[in-house]
Amino acid sequence: MRTPDEPTGQRTESLILEAARQVFLDKGLEGARMQEIADRAGINKALLHYYFRNKEKLFEHVFESVIASFIPQVLHLMGSDEPIPDKIRQFVSIYLDVIYENPFIPRFILHEMNRDPEHLTAMMERIAGKDIRKQLKKLDEDLAEASRRGQIKPVRAVHLLVHMLSLCIFPVVAKPVIAGILFHNNEKEYKQFLITRKEIVSDFIINGLKC
Image 1 (cartoon, helix red, strand yellow):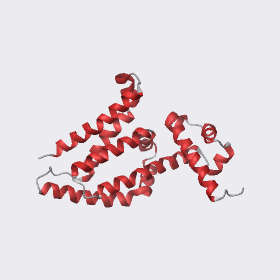
Image 2 (cartoon, one colour; image 1 turned 60 degrees about the vertical axis):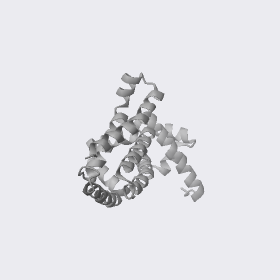
Image 3 (cartoon, helix red, strand yellow; image 1 turned 120 degrees about the vertical axis):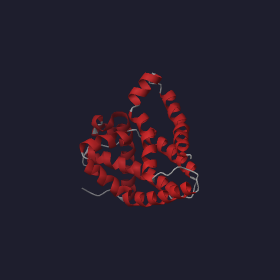
Image 4 (cartoon, one colour; image 1 turned 180 degrees about the horizontal axis):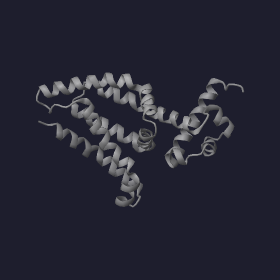
């Protein structure tokens, strides 16, 4: 088979990835079908299989592309000289935006933690494992300095990160229950709920760190 020329190949791959992201968003990994992804991308199924052998490989590529677009923002933030409260507020805001637009991310992570945690670990390590550890070390130093100055209680960066992730992830993973029971599946009200949580989660963590 002839290899597509680079510009055309890049455009086709971009179309496939966006179409796949939308289908995974609507159906999840289990419910998605390659034919539906091909139809949404405006290509035939054979061409889709040329680029991606199967649904699982395509999902991984979509997952990695979304994570790869999010990680640089977080790494820059963690390594910046911003005050700790500002780092917390920005992290929570960025992360809630990303997982609201891509709710399959936390669901996939939970699924893979049960199915194949070694595979998930290897994938995350490949994306940014070394850089994350480097910036966590920098954040640890900033937190220790803020504690020495009496600005916050002592806390390790890993605990702060897990606090923020946990408080952001659950409302998205539990969306079917939260949105269904509390908001009668009104998407506008649910989104406003998440927007409000940006401030609530940030305040909760920041106030908990105050001496």
